[in-house]
Image 1 (cartoon, helix red, strand yellow):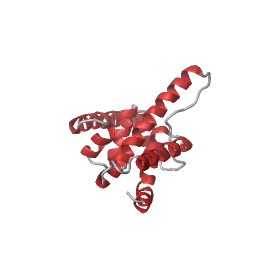
Image 2 (cartoon, one colour):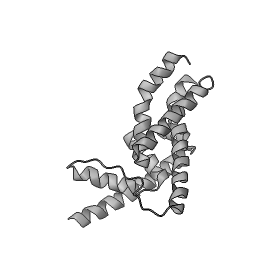
Image 3 (cartoon, helix red, strand yellow):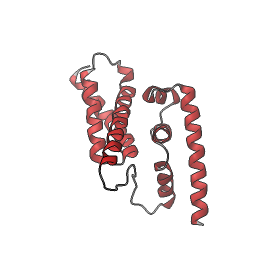
Image 4 (cartoon, rainbow, N blue to C red):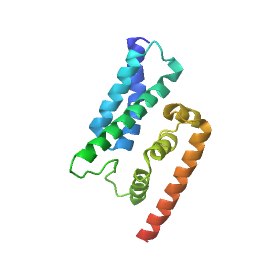
Length: 163
C-alpha cells in the first residue's frame, strides 16, 4: 500500500468508522482516538491486508478497540464514585420518532447495538458483519433478528407510554 492509497482509505472510510464507533460509545473524543488507532494499525499492517479487505479490516480493528475501551471504562466506573450516562448519543431534533428509536437502540446490549448499526445504519451485509465481529453469518442473522425483536418491543412499549 502506497502513501496515496492509504490517504484514499482515510478519505473513504474514516467517516463511516467514526460514525459507527461514536454511535456505540457516545463520546466523540474517544471515538476519534479509536478511529485513529484503527488507521495506525492499518498502516503498520499495510503489507498484510488485502486491498479488498481494507474496509472490513478497519471496522474489525475499530470494533475490537471499542470493546477494549468499554471494558476499561466499566472497570474505571466500578472504582470511581461518580455517575455518568454511557452510550447515549442523541440528536438535538424535533423528530421524536428518531429520538425514540435512538433511545431504544441505546438500551440494547453492545453486541446487539453494533449489529443493528452495522446492518441498518452502515449497510453491511451479513458476511461482512460476521468478519468484523468474529461471528458466523448464521449467528449474525440470529442475533440481529433477536435485536430487532427487542427493538420492536421497546418501540411498541414507548409508543404506548407516549400515547
